[in-house]
Length: 121
Length: 182
Image 1: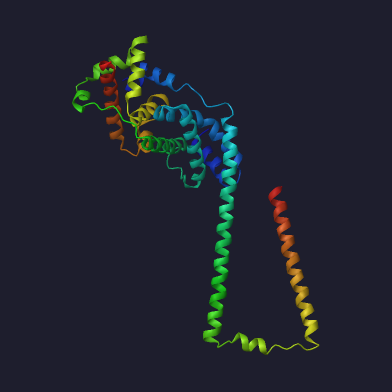
Image 2: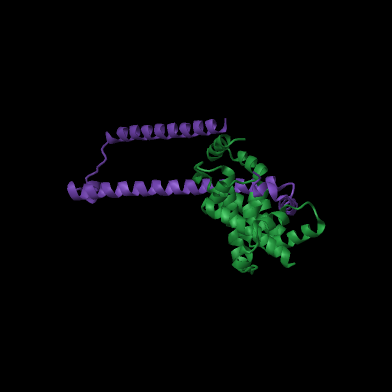
């Protein structure tokens, strides 16, 4: 049995004619430029959101630790700072801490560099 | 390319291979333009709305779940974008009494819409098409021009399949009334 779609050939023909106009030849290129801009925006939004979450999580952890230390362990930061004293032996320990800090920073930098390298390859 | 392959393309785009989106632009920009031009009837507006539709599709790409074909999903975005634009313009549509539309017999509709090429009939049909609502023009464009099935149309227009059939039937008869009135 013929459906209306098969029967209405005149209507099909007129509709085909009325939509025969086409988009400019460089439409895809123009659109791809817009899509790339949109993708960059999307990525920036995602990065900003991640940073916000990270900051919020860090602030919450610091806040929670401070609250716990002050409430349950009666920790007084001013009192503790006053008790810090520097003796000639503490100089070598500080040097060691400084060395560990530099090592961590170096490893973080290496990790970042290798990740970038992997992304580009 | 099948729906399965298109889903793979979409996954790759979401993973960062943005350039693959050009495949969808090449494949669907013309059909989307054909649909939108029938709704807004202005070349410049239609081109802009095609751009808006693709940008929206790109933004929402992660929400495409594959429960319908990608083209149906894209047509739905394009249809909504174009219809929103026409609502902002608030164009007056041509009103015909429902009884007059119902009085057209199926045979008469078949005869008018299936007749062989006749210059006068073609001109009348072109004019009648302009007088249809944007909704009705979109429906028949997708049905006749883009060969969309009733179920796909139901997804695009958010209607039931039987509602789509009724609308198509009514639009055919409305076209006959508009042709006869000229």
